[in-house]
Length: 423
Image 1 (spheres, rainbow, N blue to C red):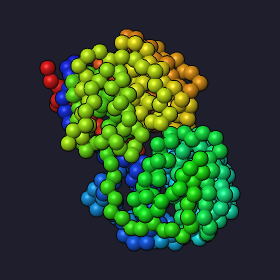
Image 2: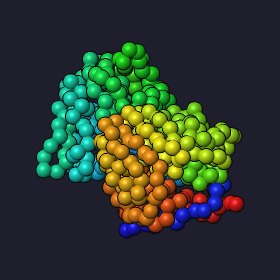
Image 3: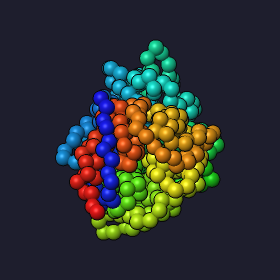
């Protein structure tokens, strides 16, 4: 399936609602599943990744069910059982990484099956850390298959490398309260996307577990279990970026309802990136409003702390009056696709001047023309490429339905841009 994006010739003025954050929802699901009793996760993400996580938890013996916009989780207090059949994880990196550590607590052998792309994504660092904890965890086989022989987690001193993904550290942190002894998890090297670790610690705190964090060491007490909670999930800052980007490209004004600038999510700082490019950002009682009346400037931006909005920035940069340099995002090569290579290849099809460098991209604005863009089955690329079609005629996007991975109702929200044209 191919979707053609219709350009818009006027500034826009609209208010949008984005779904609950997938990143926060999936962390809350892990904590709620380990708590003893019923938790309610409100405004939960309705993404396919979250559905895959809920399915995996059900297979491990945790009852997760949907009620309106909430997920109801009957936590087991850490008592889990390996399922008879493999748990499918597709290309859901968060699901696999978080559940590998969770499976260390499950009695028996838990098997996960992933997609071909998953086999190319980093996981060795987490497997090594789990083995340090006395857990036999491995990857391999004809299919992308991951095996954990669980039943207990030793705890103690663990070193983990998180330069390619902060999820390795987050995964260990969330299960550490259920280890046999206190855990001291030490970072070996730098951590990619550090705000996601802060997000993990905040969700753990909301479920009753405090982690001591100093000098790259994280200390977690054993047998300090999570408490059931009623938890509200913030609007997804990554999903909001596409509508903020639309206002930056077209001019006008967009309000993202219920979003806050002091969000737990690192991607919420994308609004400040657009502010540096010449937009006006304001937090109101209703949410975050972004407006652009004047010129759009290119910038030099370190995006390590908000990698998921790099595709959004790359497309917005096509319409600036000067070049943009995106730095410190080499870990984007390990996402649902190699996002740096994909952005370079696909945006170049439009006539854009995009230079691929070791840690990011250089983008020089140039006249754009029609092209059909390959999303690489990557939801972030599909939604970002749609932005290019707001001004460049003839932009066609392959496999537009891949947005369901994080934002199933994206295209229906997108249509509001056309209803909102204002002169």
